[in-house]
Image (tube, rainbow, N blue to C red; front, top):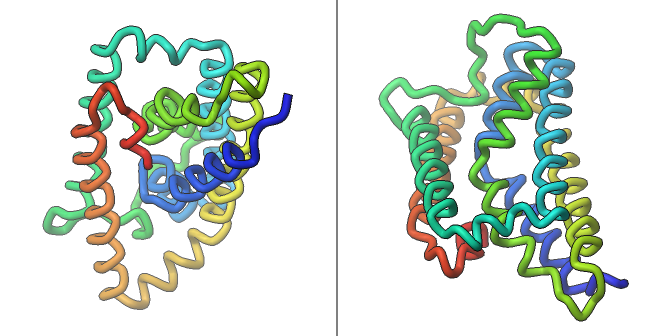
Length: 218
């Protein structure tokens, strides 16, 4: 069994675009890294990685096909995800809104809680859910052999890119935060840009037809 090069390139591009798009994972990792340090950010990233692993196992086992067989479940996922993204967008865009790069007085959580919060954040991340439910199957072709094996390989590629990108985000969050704090106008611009992207993603997710869910993360 050989995964086609077009499938590998396709899932790699999608994974890269998702990790560069502001979303729940980025916001959580940045805010935790800025407020509690890189170690806390890396522990949180381990939780995010576990969330990716859960979705990958579900995809390989065929559990995500439930959303195809039960369209109402996919609709519920879209609605919940859209509301969550709109809430994050409002938090950034409202007067006096928050920014992931702005230090805040947050309690120093223990490693176990950091891991759990990273896991839950990723499991509830609508971008990742739609990726594994709707997009990953588009790159799996019966002619190439075992569909479960293909899903495993492509999922591992996506996870590798996502974790590398998120690791760099954690690594440089503190430096970028200090850079932006010295430039209030840039910090304000970044806040509005993040809010705009989140709002646009929420609208796109909400208007995705159930028959063609792939458009939500294209």
